[in-house]
Length: 287
Image: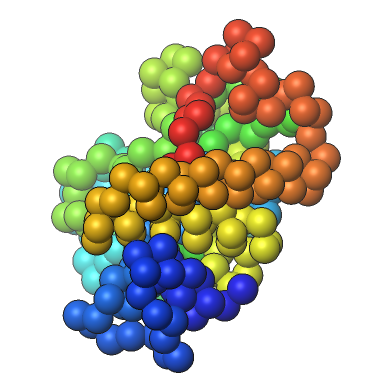
């Protein structure tokens, strides 16, 4: 299904005729396209087999260098870019900055700290290091990109594998790097700390274009968008009832397809876990 076909289906929900091209700002067809994109993102954030990268390992940084000040010049640093220390020539992969400390995974050479400048190879951001330490426990950063929505602890057939559990959070905002670069840091929700002593396993939910989704998931997104667009434009109770029924049926098809694609145990689906008492955050509505 193309975006144009999806927009025409949404327009049909309010009784408008089909269009031959996507509209410009201020047109009803552009509003329909915007509603489609809003619902696409909203639904994909829940995580489906088609937009989930499973069991990605993030390692603990091996080096910490305290900084002379919370000042990043020319920044922000880019997650996983190569950082070089002046004089020593040591290089490593940038992980995060947290509480006036930069965390790096070693690549080559030996870092010293000692008032040396650390420079990002991609961003060309710089900071001045003070004290170097090899670490086995540290915060873990994770890339924040337009291509993905969120990360969560790795699960297998509905059961959490990763321990301890975590949530991604922005780094502290006491630095002069207000955007914190293109990364988040993980927060251990079991011990309420930002540090980890071993690698973590994550699942990552990807932002996929409408045209690249499976037909069942496309249909579900369109039906939800049509229902909400009708409420926005007309508020018709009779039409809303019909569109809501369509949305429910399309959701069932999308969930069935998702179960087949993920090869999961049906008794470990989100809905089944809620019924069985293993309660997770579950929405039983259509939107």
